[in-house]
Amino acid sequence: MQREEIRELLTATELDVLLSRADQVRRSCVGDVIHIRALLEFSNQCFRNCKYCGLNLGNENLKRYSMSYDDIITVAKTAFEVGYKTIVLQSGESHDFDICILRDIVREISSWGMIVTLSCGELRDSEYALLKSSGASKYLLKHECANADMYAHLHDGYLLEDRLKSARVIKGLGYEYGGGFLVGLPDEVIELVIDNLLLIQKLACDMVGVGTFIAHPDTILKGEKSGDYELTLRCIAIVRLMLPYSNIPATTSLSILGDSDRIFSAGANVVMVKVTPQAERECYEIYPSNAHTTDIEKDRVNMQFKINKLGRQSS
Ligand code: SF4
View 1 (cartoon, helix red, strand yellow):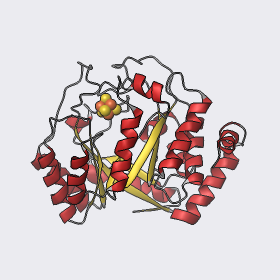
View 2 (cartoon, protein in one colour; view 1 turned 60 degrees about the vertical axis):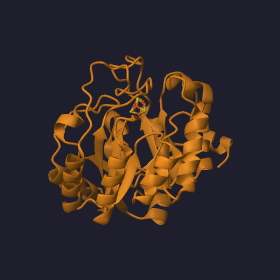
View 3 (cartoon, protein in one colour; view 1 turned 180 degrees about the vertical axis):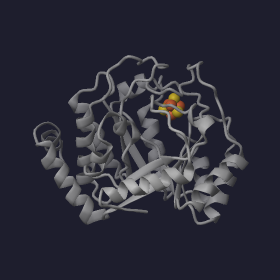
View 4 (cartoon, protein in one colour; view 1 turned 120 degrees about the vertical axis):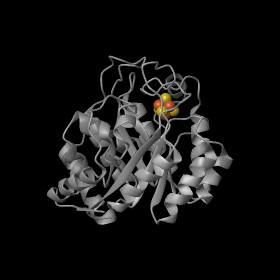
């Protein structure tokens, strides 16, 4: 898709027309199934200072945790037994969590036939390779912002080019690669939204998460206006048109801002349900969210019910 076509879809096409096109493409390319993934946030340790994220290193109000091997395996096992086929293991970026323990966790969970997706930020090339050879099959590493200067500003000096280098390594190792970006960051202009979409297309992502910026009170961006719900929906729909066979999650940040069911008619075909134990869950807020008590089995049943009510099937 070219820049001008994206601009037209973002700014001029009627929303319902765009969503309906995306929904048709979704139906014919990936079907009616919505995949429910278990999301386990196993550590909130992070040495980065991303300006939009509540887990930033400078947040002294946050109680830090890392779950033990046994606790992670127990949660994953419960999730597997209640029907989850895929678990997303997510953490901040930190060298505090031993890569060999993570390798063992991946190996153990994969041995049951459960698919392991990792979302642990930028690692060394050898670490991506180690985790791949231990059984992990997907890796999420969103670029968040396609403008190099703005990226460096938001990420406290870290570079977009390093992020993209990691993406290339991840893809080269044969992982399914998940990219994505944030809509509504302060100082965003429409050209940046278009650049974000073009980068997703160039990276040929297998999975694409489009989140909406929501200011966290313990960040430097506290008080800033949230991203726009409709613009995020448009981005999701455009991603579905660009990459018809990709997996697109209905991101939680978007469902906080508006009708969560509508996301599924914009092209989304995946949803992540948190299985993080309650105490840890309360300490894993990238953006402010509604507190919700974790009940691994009930939450899955409720999600299946919601999906069925939409006339879709769950997996
Ligand atoms: S976005 Fe990720 S790397 Fe950045 S502060 Fe949050 S957890 Fe750490």
